[in-house]
Image (tube, rainbow, N blue to C red; front, side, top):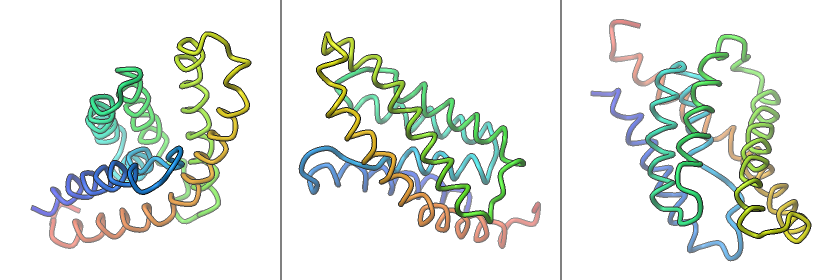
Length: 166
C-alpha cells in the first residue's frame, strides 16, 4: 500500500510543474519531474529510475508541442544512469547532490539545444537567450534538489516502516 506513495509523489510534482507554468511569466526555470527521477533512482535503483523516467518523460512529451520523444529518452536514461551509480553517490553529502543535479540539468539543456537550433535555423541567433535560460534552469534545479530529496527520503523511510522485507 505504501509503495504507491511514490506514484502519488511523482504525480504531485508533475502537477506542481504544470500548474506553475501559468504562475511564472517567461520561461520555467526548474524541472521537478527530473529532480524526482533523480531522487527515485538514487533511492530505489536503476530499473525503478528507468520506469519512472520513461513514464514521466512520456507524460511531458505529450504535453510538449516541440520535440516528441526527447523527454522520454533523456529522463529514462537519467533514471537508469543515476540508479546504476547509486552506490557510488554519498547520500548525505548535500553539495554533491546540488552539483550533480546542476551537471544533469546542463547536459539536458545542451542536448535540447540540438533540436532547438535545428528549428531556429541558426545557432548564433538563439545562443544568448538560450544560455541565460540554461543558467537559470540549472540554478533552479540545483536549489530544488535538496528539498525534493529530503521529501523522497522521508517517503522511503515511511515505506520501510511497514514493509517487513527491508
